[in-house]
Image (cartoon, rainbow, N blue to C red; front, side):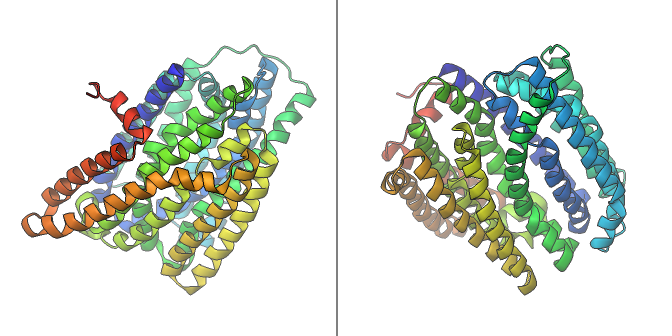
Amino acid sequence: MDSVKKSLLFSFSQKYSEILVGFVSTLILARLLTPEEVGIYSVIATITVVAHMVRDFGVSNYIVQERELTDEKVVSAFLVTFFWSYTIGLSLFCFSMPIANFFERSELQSVVLVSSLGFAFIPFGSVSLNLLRKDMQFKKLFFINVSSVVVSSILSITLAYLGFSYMSLAWGSLSGIVTIVVLSSFFRQRVKIAIPRWSVITSVFSFGTKSSYISVISMFVNQLPEILIAKFHGMINVGLYSRANGLIKIFNMGVLQGIFPVLLPHLVNKLKSGSDIKEDFLQTIEFITTLAWPFFLFLSFFSTEFIQFLFGEQWVGASPILNFLCVAAAAAAVYSFNSQVLISKGLINLDVKTQTISQVFSASFLLLGAFWGFKFILMALILSRFFTLSLSFHYCLKALGIKVSELLVVLTKPVVVTGVCFLCIEMLSAAMAVALSGLVYLLACSAVYTLVWLASIYTVRSKLFDIICGLLPFKRL
């Protein structure tokens, strides 16, 4: 357990460092680039994110979950990564013009061309990163990933200041990839070169086909709103959506992505020793919802203040979008780890079934919403999240032998905490708005809200309170 706590500490430190650097970078870039310029880059970034999921082809999860990882299997994983990286990279390069024509914006072609270059570097660092993750070497991963964000941010800001417009973001992203490859190669685990048997390569393909299918279809549907907005509602709205979604990602990066890299190897190791993961699953849901629901409640309530202070008046149109995204994110947080749990138990086929049904319905909701209007896309996004929540737990609870009543009991504490926070925020907005304004008002509300949240999780006897106290430099009295 100590190794898990240590890994979580480094993983969270990495994510919070990335958030801090990225946050400062975003504040600066928001004043150097317009919503339309950000929207142009965001459309291609959306496409390349899905392309990266295809490129990974489940190799990341294969390396982490493989219990007997030999040099032959590592080489096979590299070959699969190399094949898909260059296939996807060349495809993007060749289809750069058709992509630009589809969105009727010629500027997109140059962004696609630069983004495609990253796929040429990725194979030489991807496997090394996942080997470090499997060995839970999160101290090294901390240095690699934070360095990448710093380099990417510095170059993006410099180029934006020099007038490179949306291309500054594309070149900055490429520099981050190159940094990861260079540093991960430096820290890489020594692997003996072995000519893999075809049966080993096909085993990687077999696992990767299912795993990558899950990742790709999920990521595609997650990115679909930006593609639909770009096609039917203009680049300015894409930029506003992207900026609002960026605030949602603060929680995903700071909490979910801090736990994801540690959770899967931890669950695999626990199952390998013959232990049950039922308690871990329920405890994780309680922790995540206790963090997520109050966070998104506060962010939604003060959406306008946050947008104005962080990004300036030109981005104030992102405020109503942020309200919709907070509701969707609060629902998604509940089932955020279900896929990881099913994979750890070797139930990847069940995960494939769940993801297929939920994502097909979600995509259908979004496509219908796009024809009705911009706001209907956001409403469809919320509907899709609640549909996925119900379907995911239907299968996951059955697979783990958990009753619905047990899940509801676990969610009781987060509901109480969120309810107390809601009452707090109502009184805060009425009392402090009279005497305070601007940044002082926002900071004062944030401070009081945090104290009320801490008091509420202590009152309901949540173990999360003990974990937070354990991370502080002093012991609880």
